Length: 333
Image 1: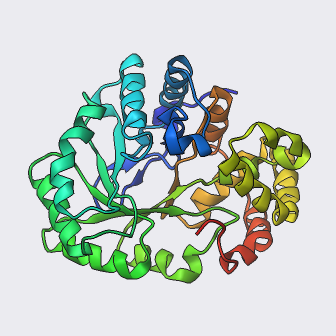
Image 2: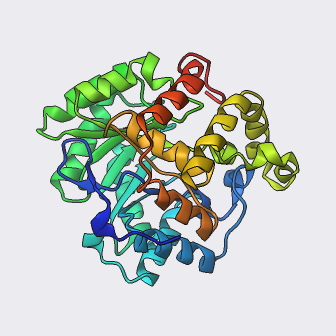
């Protein structure tokens, strides 16, 4: 495929921050190296492969990367920073989104741990700092007050949340607005197989507040590529946590996969490209996505979704095929 230049990708605003990002970013949990808990989901990757994946993403115009403290206890952050340095990219030309894990912590932890986050990502700054989960020993106000202090100290550029329901989004937004800082985003699971944001109030809330929704696992750990439906034996080499999740999703997605494959064939692209293109266009510019990649070829396919524009008929057909996933209880939540 021909990789498009960054100039040809129409960027979007990250909430009301003034920061511009490409519709497709790159998720980097897989960079954690398959250590500890991460081993249940991801296999290890060499530094050479990590570097090549990041360089391919940058060459294709992707300008932002998502990581987290919890991904290998900083290992993903460190490997991302090393890969960006290896590619020769400057801090001004890339946005890094990372996350603080609130479990069993108070809001004071934000100030105590920011030094380590910055050390892991050095020499790159934190463009978007997100509260990773909705469960914490601190109120939304306490967390946002602490985040506002980090912004005031120029330790982070913008603030987001992750996996927050509608009510907590509103409370967090109001608390941050008291400091004249916009709440930029809510990172949450959204895909053709998980459309609960439409019925939970999350989509409406984020639209009303001018926030971006960042979709994690937009390809459902590879289920929406269709390749595992064709050859289920491929699952045997996947880590157990990932394999069990995928097996359950595969059972309820056969009709949708058939529709994806039909549209993909008509456009001369893989089904994953169609799934990503639908996701970042169906909700207008509200939803962006951070698919991961463990191989260069997967990054190249992700990049194609920045180019592909599905017809109205194709968008509607996928909407109909996946409509039931607005209401079905999401797996793993």
